[in-house]
Amino acid sequence: MQETLKALSISDVNPGGFAGDWMGGGKHQTVVSPVNGEKLAAVANVTPAEFDTILGKCHAAAEAWKQVPAPKRGEVVRALGDELRKHKEALGMLVSLEMGKALREGLGEVQEMIDICDFAVGLSRQLYGLTMTSERGQHRIQEQWHPLGVVGVITAFNFPVAVWSWNTAIALVCGDTVLWKPSSKTPLTAIACTKIAETVLRRFGYDPAICSLTIGKGSEIGDLINTDPRVALVSYTGSVPGGRHVGKLVQERFGRQILELGGNNAVIVSDKADLDIALRTIYFGAIGTSGQRCTSTRRIIVHASIYETFKQRLLDAYRKTSIGDPREAKNLMGPLVDPAAVDTLLAAIETVKAQGGKLLIGGEKLPLPGGCYVTPAIAEVSGNLDIVKEETFAPLLYLMKYTTLDEAIALQNGVPQGLSSAIITNDLVESERFLSVTGSDCGMANVNAGTSGAEIGGAFGGEKETGGGRESGSDAWKAYMRRQTTVINFSGKVELAQGITLDI
Ligand code: UN1
Image (cartoon, rainbow, N blue to C red):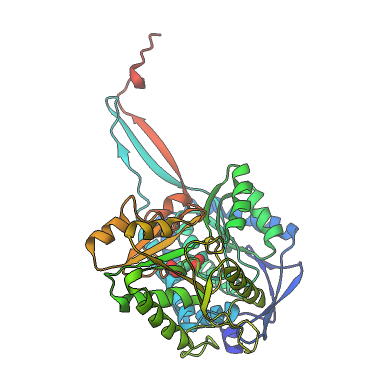
């Protein structure tokens, strides 16, 4: 533990604010590891006055940064990726220690950071606009993309470093600066990442306030980000109620926003499925990150003819799940993030039962140090009960039955969230139907692949209460820039559009 903290320059007490200088004159917060209940380190939160200084510097840094040619900005991102490669082991371990995910997943998360840096470096030589034909002779219409300014990045505990990197790597090549407010549950990984970014920016001679940090409560520091017009874009990852709050505040001032909110992801298991594929993808989707991914598999909709067989196979796999210290390779499941998350799971299970569902397995608190370990639960339900429509951020999987594909798709779409979805089938017609306009209504729809574990190359995000935002790959970069449509007249005379004539 000490070795990891040292490798990432984390001290006993760490200032939680950065914009070229480190500062933290606010309340001290002790970070306790859910792995064993031991203290990791303390963080000094920023005060509102310090927030103002940090944002001021981050905003000022944007002026020079936007004028650096994009491929040169890409060089910084390449170096950031290289630095992350060097720190992969330590950072992956700190992710596990701070929020409890299995080390293999902590390392996978850092790999996502490296991957998005590679993607962004290529992007730095693109950032392309379109040209259109003009109705006027010797005119050209063209669009170009300019940086926005400060991007406020508010992240959740469950992907404490990757979500920052998706936003930051793209924002940096787009010419924006970044002000990061991490979850109060995971401030140490945020400090470690900011230190890495600081080293890289200083090495290149750029203003380190380009990657600023502000640690504090969402209701205080988060709202200062949401309401300040100096923050051009707020990229928020969190719960639906959180997103509703952020959305209103940012919209009020006509700021831009990217919302990545809750998921309620289902897998349809067809009678034409390869059940080995179904089992492996659902198992990882449901217990990975202890069910605390926004992409976690929460519902499985199984064809009636294979329902009992598949249920037994899944229960067998669940029985064998090794749960414990996430640093040990044999453990597939670590703790939940904190004792409150355990209470949430136990309460949800009681509600499921009260609403007519049947608990098949799991949902027990384990007597391990730290008090955050549970056994993953499966509940059998008759359909989308009220509790099933909510995202319980814990390893609670709902199992339901279908007979026709129409019915399965209706169940899949019959929740307020729309992030990720999957069908396991070897039938081409079923697969195409699932991906068609009358199929899955989610931002991500997979065939014979699970709901979680999206690659950074695709656009990441979802519909309905998931918020509509897109991050990461594809053309998600466009949300981090402002589009400018330009008309260039090289005719030597004035010709008005829409055929309007003017005799003067
Ligand atoms: C999240 O849970 O907020 O697709 C992000 C996945 C990961 C990212 C999850 N690549 O599961």
